[in-house]
Length: 64
Image (cartoon, rainbow, N blue to C red; front, side, top):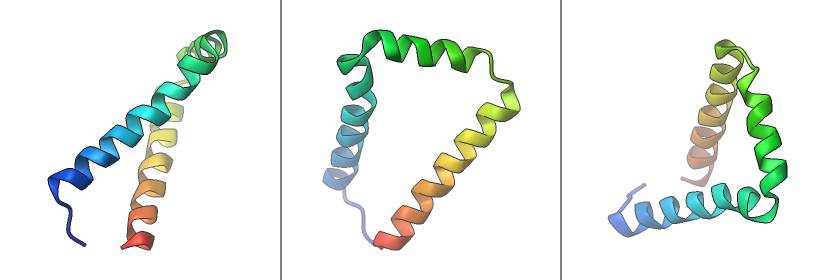
């Protein structure tokens, strides 16, 4: 699988779009979810981050 700079920028642009949907569509809901994140332990946040990374790697592997 070959990644050129255009593909990388397109992926980055899509990430920004997906990250911006919730704050744009429901600022109060987004704020409430961020407040809930503040009460989680570091280990819980790390586990969620690990799951996201592994899901992303599996998706890229599956597509490649």
